[in-house]
Image (cartoon, rainbow, N blue to C red; front, side, top):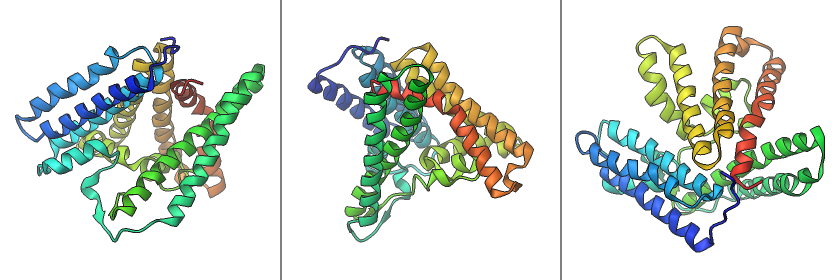
Length: 303
């Protein structure tokens, strides 16, 4: 896909609104038992919608992302032991967090969270400036070093800013959402990064539906591998819909490399290494593999 087609803001918004409506319909239609079939039909429509949209990379990325979240919600609702209320199912479709674990709290403005989110937004803007304004003017290896290095900062800080914005907004309304991030840059091992610190919403889903079933059958290593394979497939789908086969391979390959690193560090006993050495291992793995994720991500943004 060339990505040169740019839809007008009203058309873009209309497509996104339609996909969100389908996500809500998936939530309403899916419960445990035979009724899950109706949710599956709606989900199939949601998965097909990005292919019907104009060949605009940004538009197709967002449509694919919402459809992937719909998939996660469908599996979660179809397998939950106790059927959630329709209101909760709709809420799940509209919030990238497991709202079943949300808690009522006194409404307040989280000043620290607001400041942190603003700080991350500024860092992200700086990274974006380097990607869009500086890197194109460079030649050779320096261009790719700046593009991928700044792109990593841009993407990481952007995600952190978004997470803070969501938590602060809900906190102001008197709702405490489950923590999604916990200072990923402080991870001592690759396993710690993915299991405890980065995007806990997706981690819990992968653990519940991919790792746990195999671990209960005494195949924990296979469970870890399967969780990363599914994660790779989920992320590769975004690139497949919005970009091309090369970027699909890059995106999926990033998560397969992460799975291999997690299994390798279990065999090597990295968790028992001195702290500085374990962190050096973690940073080396992440920085060396980062371009596999960063390049597709930047193309999603039009860079």
